[in-house]
Every structure is written in structure tokens, then in C-alpha cells.
Image (cartoon, rainbow, N blue to C red; front, side, top):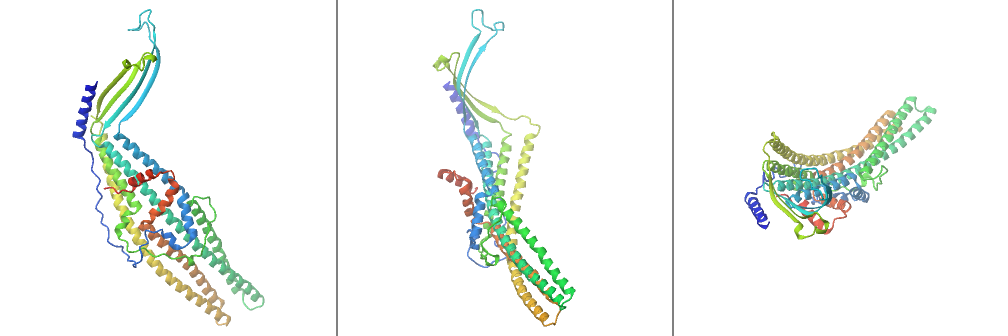
Length: 497
């Protein structure tokens, strides 16, 4: 027994050590043409892209909403569960490096035919028992690197899932901040509309009184009423949009639809700086780019799995156990049984399936390569578009503020001249209508300016995603022990070389 087992192990080990190779190409990061700077220059400021930028708005309600979203958002919970799934898949893939050890036990009672060939003679019992207890071992030698490539692909899938979750954190924080800014903008629009409606209601009442006294005509009364109703139409429309935005934000927060608290007006909200002095290469650490790269790593590894399928699989097998016809003698040394061997299995003809699977793997890798490069290009475009929006919207906002002030003067002068009898009330209505529209547009542009700044932080990514993810991890992975956390950090944070 020992001689046979030794020969088998020595032969297969020599074959393994002498012929072990890894099929498929090793991953190499593609050459990336990254611009050295953004298309739109920004003033030199403190680098704040790595901070929890939403705190710079100095709004504790917003801080609390983002914290709540990171704790309760359902999509983030789904992503966390998906992460645990892919972590388990890594363990499954890595298990192929080790032998499989199993056990078996059995007991049976049988009766044979006395009339069958080889049946027991008369006087000998036709019934008997059989008992067995064994341990089996099986081990597939990874001669062609199939298990190694499968493990590499599983690890890349895990990293892609992790970066996908971080991309969700990025979108989640930005989405909550943008929705909150939109609510503040709508609140201010509602205040403007309600104040304007109140003034126009007073004008309608005044004109009705003056009409009864013969001071104004029906035409002027009708004009005042028309302006009143025009404003009245806007108020429920704005209120509807406020409710819809609140309900959408509530779902993001993991709550049932309901009202959202606000602590300030949009005009009193602090305005953070635009992050500057950040090299464009930092953008390559954006979660969606890292996720696209890990998808490419996985596809690259699966080419090796497809190529390894052309070669035979070699497995070592063994069994050690006990077998006896009597339970009382099952543990006797004479009941021992064993076997050991090696098995080879490989393809001869597959109807072209192996070639097709290899072509599929290579084609998928090429698709994901182009997707990776396209993701990078889009990321740079996102940043430049966001920077353009911040600069130009700020210019528009400044001009809009000047326009509002000019229209306030226009409305005042028109009212004065109307009171003095130099112009008709049409001049006053025109001035007030223009002022009302300009005030609404100014408020909308305020919200757009804040939203564009949020988009800059979202487009650039940065270290703030790690801070936000740490908040989410406190809820998603409370069961991780320190040792598990260290293992997780090594697995998911170490860059692929």
C-alpha cells in the first residue's frame, strides 16, 4: 500500500511541479491618455475634495439627512448584501486549491436468491448484513491555472461589487444634497408666489372699490384679476412639486413618503468653494472607473479559464475506511479497506464548443476594455461639464440678481407714475409681472448654482467617498470582527498589480 501511494504521489507531484503553468494573459492596465488639467481652470483654493463636503453648507438638517440615507437606504442595503455574496464566491473559487475531504457511513441488510447463479447452498442463510465507514479525499491539480484564474476572476468581481457600492454611496450623498437644495429653492419660490398673490389680491380689492367709485374702468379691474389668477395657478403647481420632491427624498432616506424638515432658506445657505489644485489623474480613483477596471480584470482572467479547458484535468483520489459483515467486527484491524489513484480527464471532440467559449471570453474582454476607456472619457467630460456649469451659472446668477434689482426700480417708478396719472395701470402690471418672473428665475438659478457645485464633487469623486462609506459600513457590516475587517481591507483596497 505505502509503495503504491508513494509512487502515485511522487509521479503526480513531479508532473504538477514540472508542467504547472497558467493559461491566458496576465492583466496589464491599459495605457490611458489623461489630460494634465481640467478644461476650465478654477481659482486656487484649499483642497476640500477629500472632505465631507456637505458639511460645508453648514446645515445640520442636511447632515442628518445624509446620515439617515447612509444608514437606511434600501439600494445601499442591497449592494451590501451583494458584496457579501461576492465575498462568498471568492471563498468558493479559492476552495479549489485545497483537497476535498469527505466521509461516509452505511449499513444494509440483504437477502440473496438461492436459485440465482452463485446463490448460497441449502442450509446456509440467505440474509446478511454489511457495514462500512470511510473517509474519502479528492484533489484536482491546478496544472493549467484554471483554479487560479477562476479565483482571480472571483476576486475581481468582488472588488467590482465593492466599487459599485462606493459609486452608489457617491450618488446617494449627491442625490440627497441635490434634492434638499431643490426643496429650499421650491420653498423660496412658494414664498415669492404667495407674497405676490397677496399683493395682487389687495390690488383687485382696491380696483373693485375704485371701479364702484368711477375711478377705474372694467378693463383695469379685469387686468388685475387676470394677474391674480395667473399667480394663483403657480402656487398649487409649486406645492405639488414640493410634495413630490419630499416623497422622492423620503424613499431615498429609507422612510415612508412624508414631509422633510428644513432649517434655513436657500439664500442663507453657506456656499462651499469649488475644489481646485486637484490633478486630473485623481479622477482615475472614481468608483465607477475602478469598477469598470475590475470588470476588465475578471474578463481577462476568464480567458485563462477558457484556454485551460483545452487541457486535461488531473485529480488525485483516495479512500480509507472499514467494512464488515458484522457490526461487532467493524472496528477490527482486519476490516480496513483503502484505495488510492489518479484520474485524468480531457476533451477529444466538443463540436467546436471550446473554441466558441474562448472566442466569447476574448470578445467580452474586448467589450469591457472599451467600456473601461469610455468610462474614463465620460468621467473627464463630467468634471469639465460640471466646472463649466458652476462658472457660467454663477455669472448668470450675478446678472439675474442685477436684473431683479433693476426690475424692482422699474416697478417702483411705474407705480409712482401711475399714482401721478402719467401712465396707465398696464405699465404697472407689466413691471410687476416682469419682476415676479425674474424673482422666480433668480431663485431657480440659486438652486441650479448649488446643484452644479454638488455635481463637481460627485464628478471628481475623491476621498470624501471613503468617509461616507465608513458611515454606511457601521450599519451594513456591524458583525465584522477586527480580524475580519483587516482581511476585508486587504482584499478590497489593495490595487491590482
